[in-house]
Image (cartoon, one colour):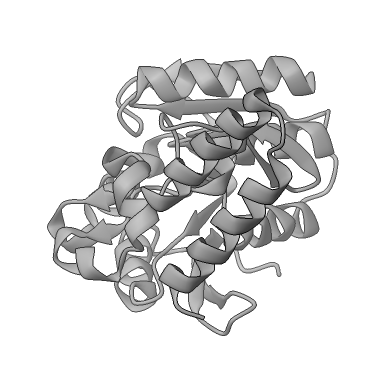
Length: 250
C-alpha cells in the first residue's frame, strides 16, 4: 500500500476516535509527526529490545531486531562466569544493559563519544536496574581494559550509501550513530587497531556489520589478531550481519 493512501486512512480513523478536544490535539500531533517521518518509537518514547523496554529519542538510534541476534549470540556462546565486558558505542545502552541483566556476574562497561547518548543510556540503566559503568570515549581512546568481551554495533553506513537509508531514519535518527568515514569502515579500523592492547588472551570480540562489509571487516580483524579465528555470521534474513573474533573453540 502506498504511504499517501495509508496516511489518509489513518487520519480518518484518528478523527473518528478523537471526540474530546484534548484527545484530538494529541492525535493530531501524532499524525503530524508520522507525516514528517518521525519513527513511531520516538513518538511513544520507547522501544522493545531483548524483552526490555528502553527509553529512546533523537539522541540515540532505535534498537533493531538484528542487534537482538548479536546479544543472543553472545549469551549463547558465553556462560555466567565473571567476565569483564565493554560495549563500544552504546547509544541507548540496549546491548550493555541487556547483557548486564542476563548475566549479573559480568562486569559491564559501556562507552560512547556522544554525551547525550550516555545520559540517556544511564537513564535506561537506572530504570531497568542494571549495573553498568558508563564512560565517555571515542572507541578505546579513554579505555584501559583489560576485557574478556568487546562488543560493538558502531556507525557503519558509508556516506556514499545514503540513498539506502530509509527516509524516517535519515530525518530523525542521529547521523553520528549512522555514518562512518572511509566507506563505513573507520570505526572498525580503529577498534582493530586498539583492541589488541586491551583484550585478554582468551578474549572475544563481537561486532555488528553492514550486509556488504563481512569480507573487509574479517580481513581487518584477522590482520589485527593473526592467531585468532574470525567468523562472519548471517542474520535471520540471510545477510552478513556479525563478525566474531575468538580462539576457535566454538
